[in-house]
Image 1 (tube, rainbow, N blue to C red):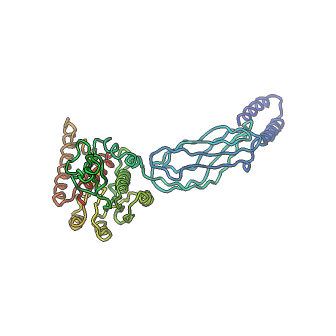
Image 2 (image 1 turned 180 degrees about the vertical axis):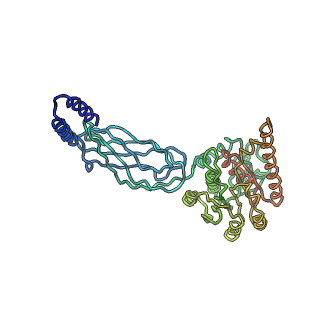
Image 3 (image 1 turned 90 degrees about the vertical axis):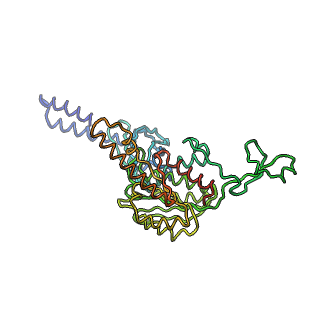
Length: 427
């Protein structure tokens, strides 16, 4: 278009003089037809081969590389632009530009990051390339169907599985030792300074002529039931994601910790009705079953029906278990009907609720009342905190423990509470 525009302007100026308009139109037409010869110096669409390589599963918020392999078996080099059909919730660094030489295979790499969990289909690849002189550009659309799953961020789960003590110490917490002499017998080892003298194994000490001691560990084979609230309030946005995202990440970390210790884990996701139920099982392979069942749960625009889910749980879970509920504490405190079912569940199960702390409310209670408006905001925030504290005390008197944690410490707090309950043999 640039060459054609310059030529047209030049001929137009010449036409003002003695040059005939017929010559102008004839020269324009000849140049236009000659330009088609440039198309012979570019590959045909059917000669190019494309292949996309990407991970079948991506974790939310983490960067991943996608590779597009382009095979050019022709004798022509060309420059290109490509756009991949990624969903709108992905980072889209398009168009990707570059050059492919003749008779070569090029691997084009770009980086993306998914923002929302779910199952996606990526079908088309849009590819444009220019000929040798760049007078014409061809476009081809390639069908490359792919299925992609975006799962929760498992960074904290991996950190725990790599080193449980280091994972907890990072947040200033320690794995608590179990009560003396409690738990299952693990092994006999050499006595070291600081061991409980009551655990000395005198028979092995006399046989080996070296002080030996018994080592115990928390009992295995306990039942852990994780409840994940998917109601309206779990859609509240946090610094990274929303409450449901943090609850999913924390619940998977707790599940990994319990499965690693040989416990049975079941998971139930709910809102106004039951969305997902994974029956109890043990072994690390069960973690993948849980992940595939809950990775696509979404926040519902409805209030959670706690009474229905607790009634369902009472019917499904007959053995004594630790029930960990990830939900919004403030919303739960208004559910008087749930208290009746929880009192019945408490007779058989141990209940513990974990929620994300409202940082805005905490910040409001600590602000200086510089003016009337700030004083009103602070007083309302303090009133809400007092209401929450009063209602929590009422529930805790019934033996129903509740705790709130900052969003970045939710997984650590949940695992720490689980370990403490197991080490104290409360089940």
